[in-house]
Image (cartoon, rainbow, N blue to C red; front, side, top):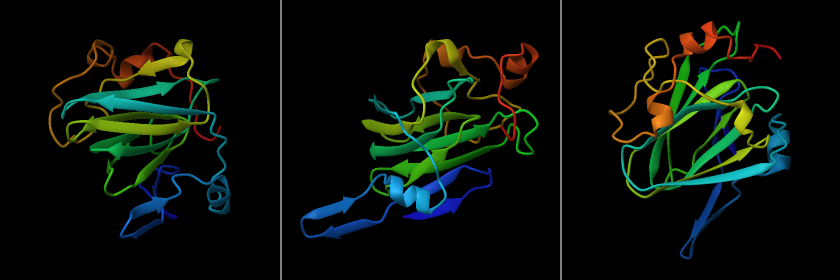
Amino acid sequence: MKVTETKLDGVLVIEPRVFGDARGWFMESWSKQKFEAANLHYDFVQDNHSFSAEKGILRGLHYQLNPMAQAKLVRCTRGSIFDVAVDIRKNSPQFAQWFGVTLSAENKKQLMIPRGFAHAFLTLTTDVEVQYKADNYYAPQCDGNIRWDDPEIGVEWPFEPTLLSDKDRNAPTLKERIERGELNFVFGE
């Protein structure tokens, strides 16, 4: 697999090696052995799978607080998405910075997002399926989100989303989360 560093330390673009012939193709979407050889040590415990019917659906910016924070390995297995990670670790030199990449069934790229980052994606096509591995279980009591259009973060979405959940539409800004003491990620932990 090819591992490409991004402008955010720890956020990586993973490109599995794809073997194709007249029958189609084969790839390893995840290999603990290959991840560890690349010095990526994650113990994934949960797989998640979402379907979005329409182009323009935005999900995020989501995260889970400590002690149930999650690292995620995200891939798009049908259609295409613009996938985003935002550093929300206090005292991080990259605090409130974001990175985005197009993930698609065709390019087979994956985004590795460590703990302490918020995550979101915007569907670029209809009939989109996204699958991701998480290194911690879902815990509703630790669930959190930040506004997708927070001006302090300034994500440059490819276009304006057309459909969001009420939870995401009404999410507080990063500044509001900080003022309320609702973030517990610390850089270096």
